[in-house]
Image (cartoon, rainbow, N blue to C red):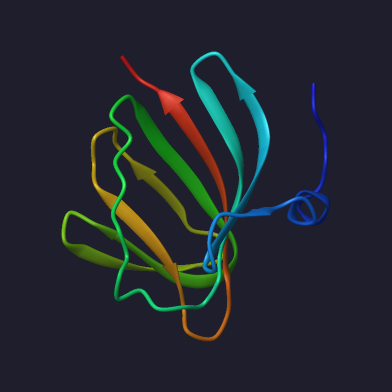
Length: 110
């Protein structure tokens, strides 16, 4: 069992690039979860990712931004939940003024 706070997890985030940092929270057979932070930046070169064997479930914990999925842009704000089915190309971006903080779970689906 693991118990922590969002604040403690945010102190452990590791930078992937200038816009994205993350910290794993829990992992097991068929799933992984954690916190991912998107910082304001240039979304002109946003690359969509696709998880071929995992659904993505996430909740916006703080900030605002957008989710792009199936050529659709969805405005995100604190409290929103997202489900992205496996194989669906998607990407997130923070708004120009503040960062976007998500709790995410990647869940293997049959």
